[in-house]
Length: 142
Image 1 (cartoon, rainbow, N blue to C red):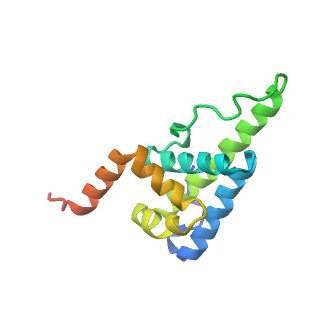
Image 2 (cartoon, helix red, strand yellow):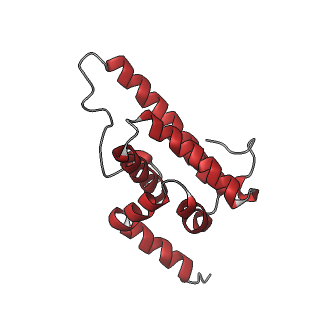
Image 3 (cartoon, rainbow, N blue to C red):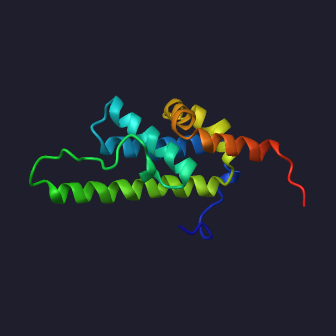
């Protein structure tokens, strides 16, 4: 998604960006059955988005709504479309914030889903965190 015509979210306050992320992530949560499992799925999706660039790489499930009642094919297709659209907005927001350190240390810990995201990054995406930490600590020489 191109950000050339959209505002630069890196200039917004932390509170404004946390609010934006919360709105977008809660919209995803509302597509589910609105329980602790839905919260878990959002956390896994966001961890996958941060670590791999694709929310669909979430480790907790391969396909949402696998057990939807027979005959619900159209409804499933609609939900998938809405889900992809919602995650696209989150990906766009992260891209426009354009500061992974700020995202991981100042924004996500204060978001509604911060606990889950941090736990899943540590548990399932440890290699990402190791590489991320090394990039931050290792001076780059020409």
